[in-house]
Image (cartoon, rainbow, N blue to C red; front, side, top):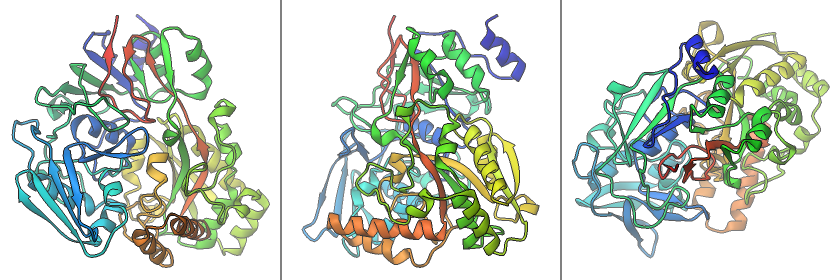
Length: 523
């Protein structure tokens, strides 16, 4: 029996099935556990949702927003009335037609949870249905990001659901069924959490006529099935790809990039610039030690970007060097605002800042995600740097899904709470200032840790209304100043990891995270 099968049996995992012409076997970085894309920012749920659901608007590879479920839209001269019309032939997986009412309810549900979505809804007088295929968004004032909000690929993404499900409150995993209108369907009865998730081709799906381009264009389900195979152990993932037991690997660890590059049976796929990643640390502002801004500042100063990113073992060309712009270095809103102190930070400065904060040795519980190619090594380095700065660090190690659940706990650490959790975002998540995770949820209580800087709020509101690009850049720099000076979120560098697929698999879209339609197997 091959090594991967032995390891899978030893670890109690589902062994990958032998290659079948019409089945794509995908191994993602994290295990699928949450099936509601509106209540989580998890990347694996985003990958699941792009198979099962669809969006009204989609971003193409050139950064332009194009109609997806929509036939198109019109906007009034005063930019206060937006009329949207669905394209013909859209059906849910149960055969019912997609209607304007479904879309209105889906947007309302998303707008109660998402940072940018909530701001769009706050600027709106309301959404109303005109007829079965037409609905209208009426604004109280010209919101500058209507299409950017509705078409954003950053979680939470406004995926469309049947109205009867979209009417549920997006606080817990409340959607009772997984019925979408996307190219694949998902049957919960077949799902074995921690083992295997099976997606089946949706024969009712009518793709757009144009080719797939980024998230836009025709979504073609060439494979009859897509399988998400759970493999928490990274060595097992590598063995599976090498032995041909898996077809697609979301992230290739740095130590294996060159060996995969030399393997004629494997193809590496590097992401576009927008698919590069920025490492961050979500911070719990509710309880000690990080309810103290100066303690948060000490934590920021302790994080050495070069040391943390070096733990990934990546080739030099896959790292950006020092980067503390919250809007991604190299992009239009990149800024040096409040970066200089972080660039020159030392452990001695971190220690002095922590002492000045009045820190009383309260536990800093850091959530370490052992099953993540990125978060496993980086979390351990961040924990050690925090210890050197004088924090009483307690590392809690588990799989990412367990940690993601724990960070929803609002209790103090002695009652199961947490203090910090390293995470990673793509450029899609961060380059838009009012969709950026360290900005968009300010004072909303909709993001774990519940950060709130009252001084940041008017800057966000000014950006929402501003149309001039130069003034927007000034406002973005002010936002970054607030984030860094108040320690709303920590950052530890910019980089990317390639994905990999077997050579006989073609059509993989170079996006930067798994979008697994459009793929076929050739022999």
